[in-house]
Length: 304
Ligand SMILES: [Fe+2]
Image 1 (cartoon, rainbow, N blue to C red):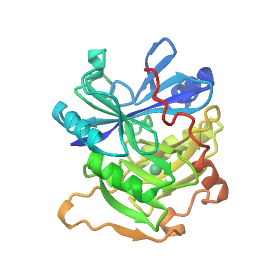
Image 2: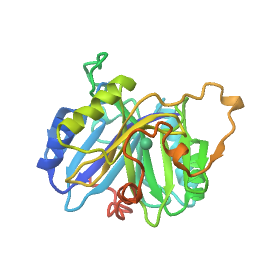
Image 3: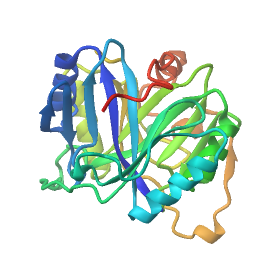
Image 4: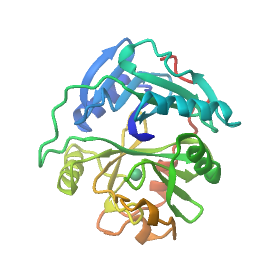
């Protein structure tokens, strides 16, 4: 079984500016560098939650998911091989660095490079204390798709994700464990990253983190608020150099009673977007920024 999002690997055109943003402002920890790669960790045992690579344009390199066991990685490989819209990039077990664990890479139906890993090296980390507003790790990733139904089917068939809820025919939320969603898809005119969400310890730490970003001169793109679907808190910011949108979040709904959960279709309205309504409202600019631009990283797996 897939358990969670381990990390996102991003290509960034201005490494100096991106490092400053993620380390100094977004409060990730520098884990290490390797040629043109920078690894950033959070308050969790994952070696890194973000990998940056110097690229001519902003692009998503890899979405990395954790699997419970090497057998689970092999099972995904079987499903990738059989799926007409998936393409194997790297067979399980061929990663050269043992700290990468038992790893598989494939292209999804829209050309994103997806990784599934079991047994990767863990990292000594400093746990996030109460009141401290460093991210704990990655909560979820939202992706823009031109085929929303296809996305829900593909990720169900290949990674075993289950649909938690819909917003009309605009968004689909998928889970793997009890968290309401680890990944979601939004209907868009092109394929791109919508946003990456980082988990804060709780709502207090989430508000402190949001305030700290404002204090450093970063105005929220949207929020703070609490979503109607998934019930998680949200404040969205933009990394000015890469243009990627990042979210601070906390307190997501957990689906403990798996048997009795029935996906709902929510209306696309203000209450679904934000139960609180105290922060900056969602407007056309928010939608435009979350839509982003077509990802130049599709169908071209990164060299590392
Ligand atoms: Fe989100």
